[in-house]
Image 1 (cartoon, helix red, strand yellow):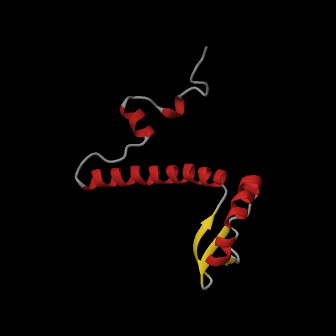
Image 2: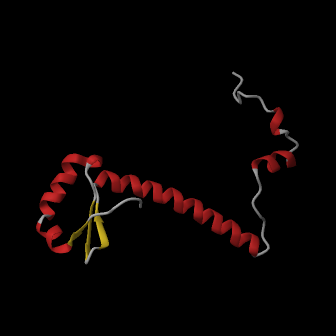
Image 3: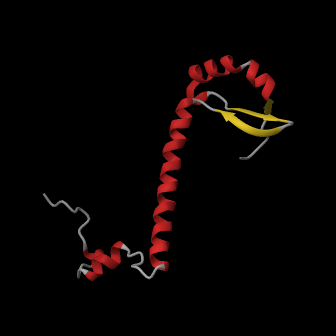
Length: 107
């Protein structure tokens, strides 16, 4: 994360918790996250619910891609089939992808 991060002490974050939650609800994605920690070291962040949901979607996408790559690598290491590109599959089927029409549905 770039830039300076203001770390709010746990005691003051705790005292202002209800206010912080209300602000997150009112401002939604526009609400500034609150970083909480001890001795200036970040330990947690309070973020708006909408941001949390958006982040979960992005995390799922990243993890899914990583999981797929890991499975492909493990399969290849075990002597199984390796990744095959769409072009390789098309060539194996006797199709030249460079000769495919721009509009796959010529209706």
